[in-house]
Amino acid sequence: MKKLKTFWYSFQKSLLDFGYYKDVAKASFWFSYKYLFLLLICLSLIRSVQMGVGYIAIRKNIPSYITTVQRELVNIYPKELELRISNNKLYTNVKEPYAIEFPKVFGDMDGKHMVVIDTKGVVDDYPKYNTVILATKLALVYPDKQQGNRTSTQVYYFSDLDRSIYMDHAGYSKLIQRTNPFFAKLPKMIDIAVVVGIILLPFVGAFFWQSGTLLGLVFLTLIMWIIEKILKTSYGYKALFRMGMHGATWSILFSFLLDITNQKVSYLYNLIFVAWMIFVIVKNKEVKTVV
Image (tube, rainbow, N blue to C red):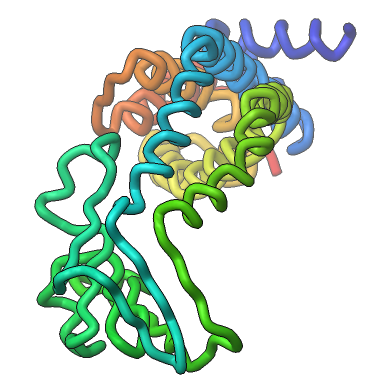
């Protein structure tokens, strides 16, 4: 409770009292570090609550989403298609090239196919098929890594199989049915994951948020150090950095409010920080060098 009172006192003073920065300049690094961490925990907690409320709003729809996914998984495999891999080669019962499209839930894929089967094709022809997966007589070709505008591919040769495989719609449906117990448990698994995430977010989120904030302060403090030389004050870089952990409060709050309202103003964080810290320096010119 005492720590919370100290935090609340520092929070108010950091926002409203230029003179408070005299004390901050003399305080230890860890005092300001803890203040900043608690501030970011509080804001991350608000974000967690916001996420929790959002999840509650969509939670009732999750079972229907899962049912849709299950249905689409069954419908992906065409009823007329039979596949057989024997003696390291792929055989089909359909006219080729044969395309399997993405389910409608994926939306418009700009004409890209999910799978194309062409046992007369070769691995090097992969780009011309405009597909995610290409099945040739001897191999499967699929994306590996995005390199600029190009996507590298991986090739899986059927010669790596140690047995023959036969698949039709009935066999595929049986495979999908084996996943039913998993899908039945999925809503509870999602609930647990969301609750754990909401509990951990304030702490994990604050840690990474603070790391980024401190990294930014390294450069912003350098700007303030140059400005203080122009203003002929003599805090020193270390004191300015400690003061900056409190001086960033306004910037963090404004940025947070913009974020939760889905707005963005370029460089606002930096501008608010620099303007506030200039006021702090000017109002406390009498402070001498602090190491």
